[in-house]
Image 1 (cartoon, rainbow, N blue to C red):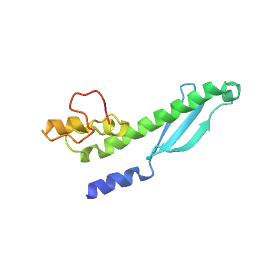
Image 2 (cartoon, helix red, strand yellow):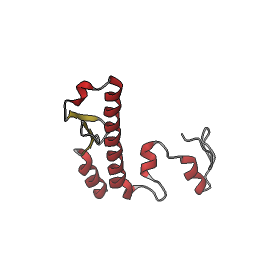
Image 3 (tube, one colour):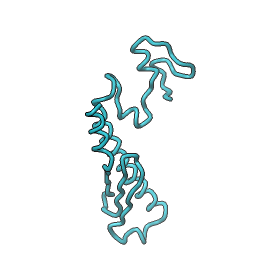
Length: 120
């Protein structure tokens, strides 16, 4: 439990930052994936179409969140049960019915059988 508390403490104030390829915009997120900082490194955004600017912002925020999710998965991965990929859990791709199938456990109502392509 002490190791888990240390791992949690190490992430408490952690942030991840992503910067666009053209260095136009940077985004920083906290461990919960919340946007904590948005920076424009140049004035180029003033000449951009709104949709183009929105896409650039969404891209860096998404990349910062992905980086943070990978960081959290790496820190907490040691505590996850064997066979559980925390990256899949955090991205919503984890299918619990497949895990239950490995252990020959009954499926809960509404869960897909192993091999089904739908995920919860």
